[in-house]
Image (tube, rainbow, N blue to C red; front, side):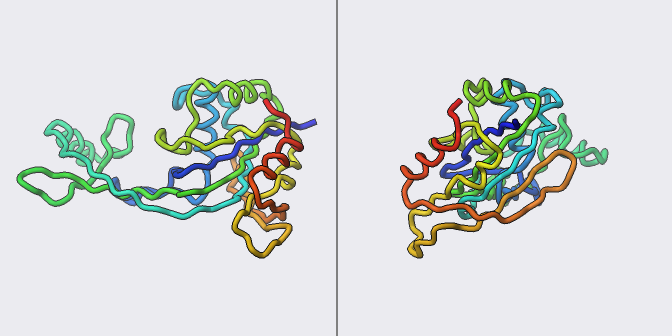
Length: 236
């Protein structure tokens, strides 16, 4: 019988590697990405960036969008680069090398000058107050995933190290069918509707993301929600 693991990605802020227009404008995707989820689990297993085994890239994820949240912009400033950094960056560009290469610097155009200083203003877009349920499925590495989620080697975060997940993060393990049965928490829904339609995003290796709509029950309190999760999933 196939076993799936469930985590809840929720917190004040999340960021999932969206398109970068320039070094100054970095957007997040609207929901967790496959690469971000693989990295999250790889960190929990104790692997460093780019050094994890190939089986992690073969995992199947399904992301359930319980609360899309809202997009918020964060404005940051970067101090003036040193002469050496300017030289290396200019040389990389002149040679036609990718400015995203491992040994190259991020190309961040400088802002207005002030007394010789060239600070740059960076705009980053984050997801505020979003909530996503993620199903993780593997037929061959159940024990490794269970141990990683139960006792993570590196701290799990929501796309950036500053963005810690709120409780509960690890929900447990159970049937793949539980993803469509766990209720969605809707405290401010005045309609009293017993169910809601949510988007599921299938993130499988080697194929484009596939979206579908499913109907799940609703609850008005987090206590009811936790009771439902406990009844469907086994704790790790």
